[in-house]
Length: 460
Image (cartoon, rainbow, N blue to C red; front, side, top):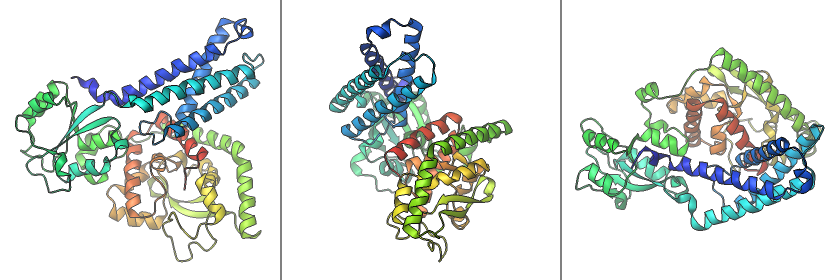
């Protein structure tokens, strides 16, 4: 065993991407005709590269490279078909912008069709023979108390364990009583190292309730020397779920943990320029949809009904600002004060339900982005009434306000609209993960994946 065993999930993803690249190249080459071959070799190489990169970006934007994609085979086929169609459209647009287009539409249709066919067949075999499940690492949890119970509850489904096999939970002195299934609890009769070697354990997760004088430090050190990865439960949950377990956080973990860096002036200036440019582009692309939303709201509620809804929200450093949204609720929705919105909320209008599903109601926040009150990516700003209450009930809730609020974010991708304090806690776990790992690349990934939510109407 060696440390590479803990990177199987990443390895599988890289292999999948490499396989797709080979299939895209094959599809492109097989689509070549003599007129194309007569053109320059450099042009052919450039166009091949551009085609492959565009296909990869389309697949990425449609979630085909997510490690926990919850889709049937036919759902994946739908995404592959849409990725091929998007690639065709993008390349056609690009070819119209240059003087001497290299490819004709018939060639592109063949290349995109073959790409869809090849990747569909490849995905079929992945599903049929469960190839994506190969070489999953074996994980042993040290502890069977309340901390370990979080793994049992949070990762109970097979989709939550795509990257590993859970060997079991080892009872440790000082563990509190929990509801872990007794069949999952392991008693090690020999020493820890012998058990790890015999059962080919690749990773040990330390999840004991009481560590002082109870951890087998010598055995853990011996396991680590044998190439077994030893992980703290907070880091394990963060890596596997993309969230931070707020109820397990202790101050020293935050102090010594990587991430949670503050922004400097250069980063803030770059962020605003990027967001402002993106806001202008988004407005140019979506103003027809905004116009249709205005007309629909007027037709449903009358000509004198307000189209926009302005609401106080809490943003960076706790500063309040007014957020702009297309009105999706009745005009008297908050006559009795601020309330959580629910899935079956009677205050939501018919038009409002539609524009919420496709995130059209959020488009007026382009104005807030240009005013520098918000960015495109960040924790969702909440109403002051909710913030004041949640700060007193949820630990580290105020940390959300250390970065600029966003129209979309990691929590919005991973969790639906919040309806209560329990949902607020779950979203806080994702928000803290984003704050810890915040980077331009992560922002770009969130923006790309947000396109999937919009295209497939996965909002609510």
